[in-house]
Length: 313
Ligand code: MN
Image (cartoon, rainbow, N blue to C red; front, top):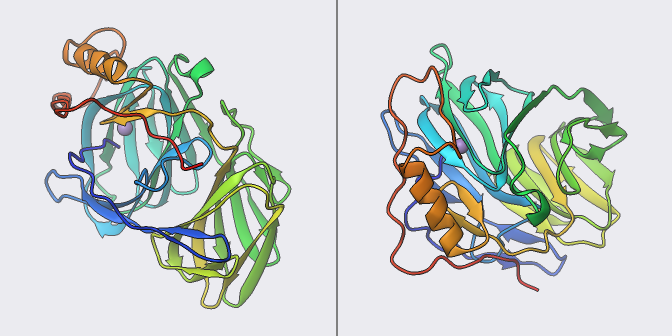
């Protein structure tokens, strides 16, 4: 998915005594015919990253179509995770794939990649999350890559868990990552309390998709991202009416990044150079074959210098 937001609004966040920070969503329109809008919880003013997770869009279930023309990425990986619908993916590595519910599609756009995303004709309802992972400095020029993995569903105390990155509840994803990470979908039946053993060196975020959930004593609304910092060896989730959520985690990223449009870099000048290369159609990004239409032009850079984002100490 492409970030088309020009002027991100700031959102207030609340810290609770239990140590849970509730990151509320803001609505971001993506434009286009039968336009869809997404609920964005990362990045925001108070928090830019959870581990290496640097972008979190939640969308649907909406009766919409998606048609995102070829657009570039640098310095990041994209994680597409659907609950409903189907999206056709084409990229400049030559991959032509279909993104389907319960299947991880992880695209690495290190040095540079471009891709298109189009919902398939029979797929009118879209519901899912689009996530980005910042690549650490040592790996941010990694070559283009695309990995597909269908995680098994494991049961724990009545919950159904699909671990797409990292390990949880005895289930480990074979997909390699460039920093220690966790990503999992969890479905809680009604009247459930689930305690998960987690790595205390990780910070975590719980994105509530549907239903109701309480994270470490703090209730979340749908599309909220509940954040807890490092130092916890377990997380307790409670639901009264049932819930579906996505659990994200990772070691604190420890680097400041510059994010603009679809690029992750380290400086304003680097981002400006990526933009110039996209506009000049250089080999850094390559070409998408088979997309019916033209590539997305980069928006103009903002007036001031782009500033690095990090997390509060
Ligand atoms: Mn994209």
